[in-house]
Amino acid sequence: MTDVEQPPETTPPPETAPAAEVPGRTTDIVPGPGGVMTDEVGVVTGELTLRTEFADGEAVVRVQYKEAEEWYVVTGGRVKLADPTDLDAVHTLAVGLLHRPEG
Image 1 (cartoon, rainbow, N blue to C red):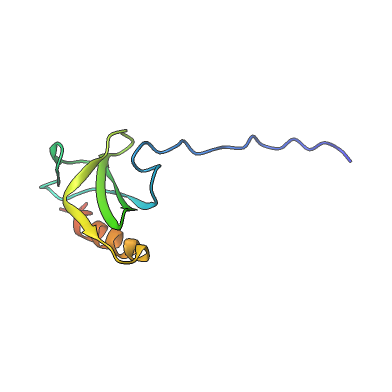
Image 2 (cartoon, helix red, strand yellow):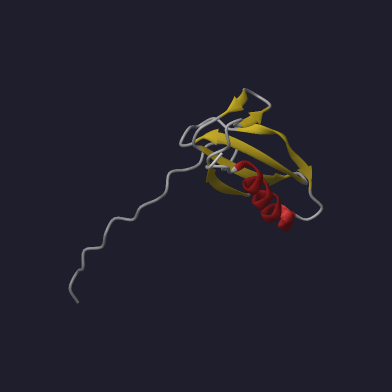
């Protein structure tokens, strides 16, 4: 047998907290002209990443500036879930409401 050179394995960079600690779904979005209101810093605008997480019976929608480290809770973005499989539906709804690249 001959040795065949294998390409180096690539590992995606780890996500920053809180996203790495709990299960969730992530989608890049561009909000409409009003941006997205957050509890911590007010309105954020521009290219964003939206993440919906599930922990302790609750879904939490968070947003960050694309490729930034800090995550902010979307105002009104918390809901109790009886079943964690409902997380996909909550995330899909949040993306549908907040992703408005055409304004």
